[in-house]
Length: 163
Image 1 (cartoon, helix red, strand yellow):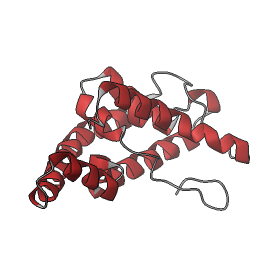
Image 2: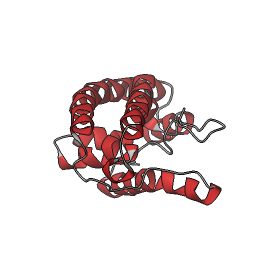
Image 3: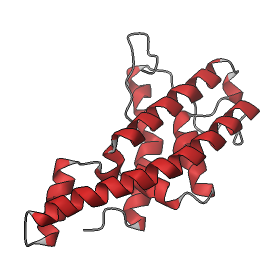
Image 4: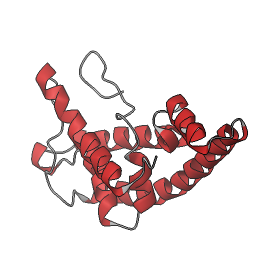
């Protein structure tokens, strides 16, 4: 059961990139995907910082996930059952690593703060900065792990602001 296969990774990426658009049906304003494709200097600086950190945290998440799998395998003689049980217990797999969840939240909110100071045409959707931009660099593991997230780990306050 390879939930990090190229096909599943691409499906996860597309799901996450489209997810904020679901909020439009509720009347929530979301940052348009696309915008200025390269962002403004503040977006690019934020992305450079995030990209460096996400690679480190992804490596930690993969180590943590390997330990999780090893623990499950030690409890059974069926390696496939052990993997299924690990995924059942942690449906986001390595993307449920608390450090990765915190990093995604922190940088989503940072991107939103940058966007708040810009005109709509200059904004970059947080999901674009956090995931889509990673695909054009040497961040294969980070993309594969992030694609395991079933949803972005954020919510909205009563005013429609990200929390």
